[in-house]
Amino acid sequence: DLRIINIKKQFKQTERRGDPAFSLQPIQLTIREGEFFSLLGPSGCGKTTLLKLVAGLLQADSGEIWVGDTNLTKVPSESRKFAMVFQQSLLFPHMSVEDNVAFGLKMQKVGKKQRLDKARAMLERVGLAGYGSRLPDELSGGQQQRVALARALVANPRVLLMDEPFSALDPILREEMRELLGRIQKEFRVTVLFVTHDREEAFYLSDRIGIMNEGELLQVGNARDLYERPASTTAATFLGLKNIIEGTVSDGRFSSIGGNFEFAVNDRFQAGQGFLVLRPEAVELMPNASLPPKGSLHVSGVIQQLRFKHGFYLCKVQVGDEQLECVFSSRQRENATAGQKVDLMVDLKDVWIVE
Ligand code: ADP
Ligand code: MG
Image (cartoon, rainbow, N blue to C red; front, side, top):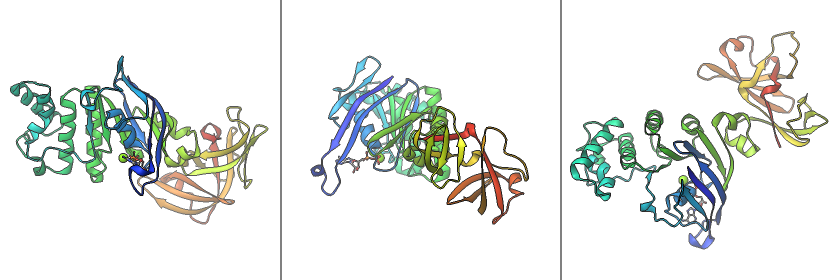
């Protein structure tokens, strides 16, 4: 396991003129062996800083980094046996692709023949068989990132650290690289600490995700847990959840401020101020003149907007002073038009309230 124990770092205002001071709050995190773990958060929240602290490229103010039984806190970066892949691949421009990949092995004093054999085999694994003798600038951006991945993996690192490695690529290439990385990570069972601001990417690749904001690790969990049970409105907003409705929980009931949402809640939700989170796909259109089933919340509203996405409709429904975003299948949508009054329901199992 990779253990990050109370790692902390402060940047003083004077270190870089003009920049505001930034502090990475003590971070406590264990990444399991063979796990694909992503740090997800907006730009400037401290993801790269944390990654550099793990890599040993930055000195922490306090805290420790361990892998298994080995304390790496004082071990210099080049001896940690971590590999890094950045947004820009940073290949040696004057070296052939296979020499680039073999470079780390040369440092480890692996013989020439064996080095090249390993480099070629690794290039084949990332789909670049036959490209070994080219120079990096004779490759596309996506191919260069494949080389960077091959170079990172060939030396059999303890942990692979990746900092937004695909964010300079166009969407189609990004998807291809995502697929490739996911497959290779499972094949090699390498532990990956991946940094991204892209929710889709984190969701697609990760076993678990840590949501970061303003130097803090807000919540850790798998994609579905985070999405269905965000721990804070900040996390919910960053996860792209739209329908966040302020209210209070008391006497076993939730009531929204505007009074449009009122329903019984079970005792897993504490009394006090709360924010109701309704996932768009959990909102259902109720058939005309039917009663809401037991164990569901029910509201009426007016359809403001219907937009066809791929395979479903995104619908905005005005409910009192709140606008709800809902997702309807094409079939459900047949009974809905803009301006129409509709009844909506949500199964109480799909209701989440954040303190
Ligand atoms: P992210 O990778 O999530 O976009 P960073 O970790 O790069 O965020 O940066 C977090 C904050 O720390 C930013 O406000 C940035 O300006 C600041 N920062 C990063 N490196 C330094 C440094 N060497 N000196 C001073 N401030 C820094
Ligand atoms: Mg960054």
